[in-house]
Length: 226
Image (cartoon, rainbow, N blue to C red; front, side):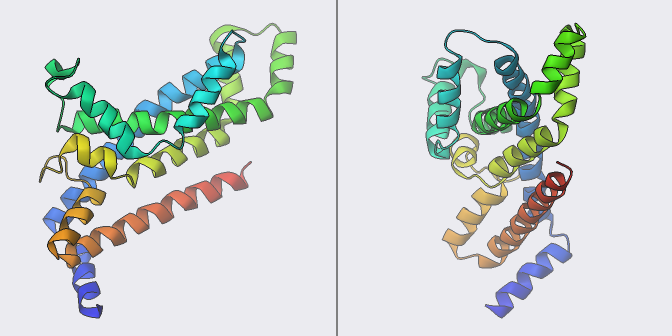
């Protein structure tokens, strides 16, 4: 085990081309998915926060329920839509990076939306009353409320990133684990472990641990600013 660990460290420190390629692919997909779900999630949370409409509670219940949805269920659902026999099969996205981004974005969207909505509800009541008194509306009102909860919003986005960077079901089902194209850290670990190639799997596992620690560090620093 020690020798395997040593070889795994050597793969990382030597900048092994395949290990670095898989890492960059995985992080690139996670950042892209987080950006998409972050923008949509923040906008949706603000709409839910600033507007009272029939069915809003139902939307919130659905969002909270989707937060715990298994990744394989999301992968299967998107797969059925993007497959050749599916309604969106003509897009030709299945087994591509775009398909993974779609799946991961759906995975992170309810998490980010629910967390941002909760933060807005708990911290911006005084701000809303003040803005109403001053008759501040439109984009200015939108930006001021968002700025007041900026740290909570950042934490929600970081949490969404942490959710997608470590998932395996969506990436495996929608990306196909294609070498040099859609192979991510988690899918590569699953593949290499099954083949008995523990050095590369361990190296990628160590990188994933480092990324997870980085995400948690950002969360802790952000919480101190609350």
